[in-house]
Length: 109
Image (cartoon, rainbow, N blue to C red; front, side, top):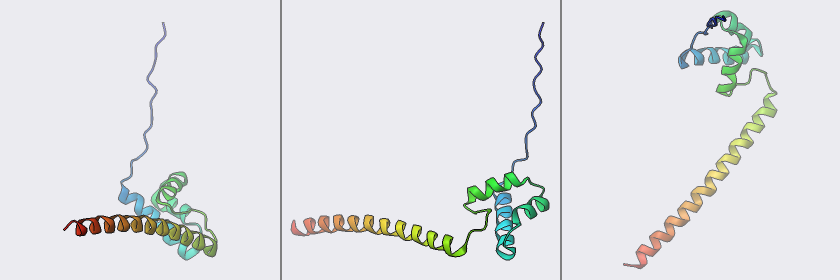
């Protein structure tokens, strides 16, 4: 006769968005002033694993690895410019459409 035992599972602590933001901000501030080491300092300070913090940083769009400021800054600016250019094109098409509707209504008066 086999007896099946339910495996005991350990659940980790759940963190609120505010707690996550506090840790992510700490890491970003620490790295900004010291260059690196924010993730391990946060792990020691808050008692959270570095893997968990790395996941939070990734989800927040914060790099845990310091990049060259000029390279990442230029890339970010180019990405922002591309997005803005696409938005402008879309808005210009909408404005053209609205102008045509306006002119058609105006002509019907």
